[in-house]
Amino acid sequence: MGKEGCRIMEIVTTYLVVLGFLLLSIFLVIIRVLKGPTAPDRVVGLDTINTIVIVSMIVFGAATKNIIYIDVAIIYALLSYISTLFIAKYLEGGEF
Amino acid sequence: MLSLIVDGIIYIFLAIGVFFNLLAGVGLLRFPDVYTRLHAGTKCTTFGSIFICGSVILLALKLWIQGNSDYSMLAIHTACALIAILVTNPTGAHALARASHRSGVKPVGAVVDHLEAMEKKAKVQKKEAD
Image 1 (cartoon, rainbow over the protein chains, first blue to last red):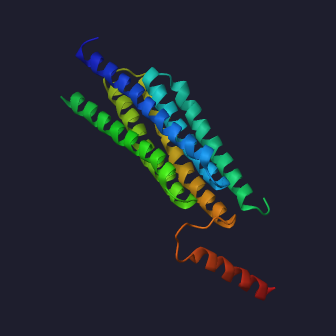
Image 2 (spheres, rainbow over the protein chains, first blue to last red):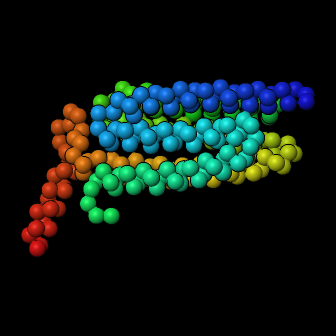
Image 3 (cartoon, rainbow over the protein chains, first blue to last red):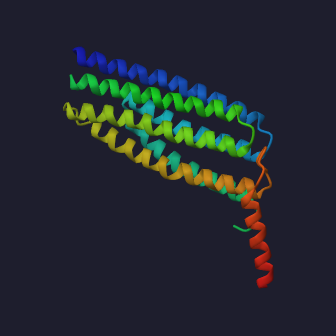
């Protein structure tokens, strides 16, 4: 653990700070989801929250060196895409 | 020396990514209607996540080259997650915009609506064909 190790510990701490800012961003979007006048507004907010949660999982996985979080993030991205498409189809109306 | 430069690039990428992700939150709060909110929410988060994933990939590649082969998995899996985000995020936003236009939400302050005119025209043409 020399100078190099210290610098890497600093980078890991920076990742945790970044995680805090991402959570703040999620909080801002949650206000819009609660306020949103129409249904598409809320869906847009949820879609944004999905993306930010994926990025937070990647940052947390990099900070704690657990690769399993990043695997979960990949699956979460694909499942949230399917759910967004399905809700969009529901809002649009018509046949499936 | 090279290691210091790579560290600097990692910090800069993280700063850009966090800045754009925060802009997404602020934009979602401040913009007036669905389409502008979609513009803020999708583009900013996609751009920010490119940079944050880029910084994670750079860190993992740096540690991998320094001899710790555990980090190769971190780099490859983060690249896979980045590709998943890049493919799914714009397509989902496109579907949402089309769905909200068809469900009857009008853009605030818009003077012309070419999509509505085109859809009306297509309907008339379909009726004439029948």
